[in-house]
Length: 400
Image (cartoon, rainbow, N blue to C red):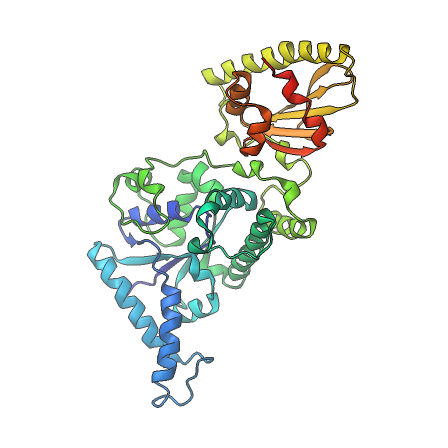
């Protein structure tokens, strides 16, 4: 039998997309999460007890090769049947629980190939927070009892990513690294490399087949069932995770790992920098980019300067500056100076008393009176850091 493939990852890392891409390959059968490792561990524990008379040296703590062989044969039989029914010849397992005990997994399948999938910490946190209302345990995320969910999730990412890096370092010849961000922005570049590592041909129509072939879906696959292509809209959503919620000790550990993976690290200006271009609305040469540019010029070049000037002339010459960063349509930010009454375009890392970051759609809703800055903050559409009192001046500029 062909040696299997394992996708190693933590929850909310974009692994479902990778799974259906693998399953779309004519040689690979990759079903929904089967949690093979958990089944294998339980089977090993059972056999270590029931076979003890036949194998006196076997125990719950020791890996007896004969028992390991029985477990391996059973898992190969289960996955082999699925693979044959699918008309394929290689089986692949994508289960987040495979990361629980990679030593045992490697003993079970010493010659397997492993695909290690990474995702930026802050994008992972944003994705995890989106499903927090339904609980994390059911999707494999275990956090401590801290009331600070952001820091707890950052700590979880640091632990899981360390496991992935350690596994790759120890078994580099059998592992292939893949970053979710490159998977969705450069599939025609990274997928040929992936299948070359697996010793398989790269089908030119693999992306089309991914979203046209019939797939078996399971827990956690609800969203992808209604997806018609690779989407980039989730890239950079970690900009809307408040950096201030992460403890500095946790941040240092996370940044060390982000640096190893060539990801952007987290700093004081994390929430002010623009989204990746693939997730922005001002695509070069597009009509939307032109319209957005004109609207920003009208707003920050005309309307707000007039209102700021009137605001300061009315005796409210407070020494306060507020930086507005529109993350999905421009590389620059805008500082509102309530003392001088000026509105200035600045670099994203320019300091200010308060920073407010949001999408262009949120700005439009505020301008059109569909929402207000205060509600947008409570809804998570605006990320605020710094002086709360200074932020309280902004709504007055948008009053109708």
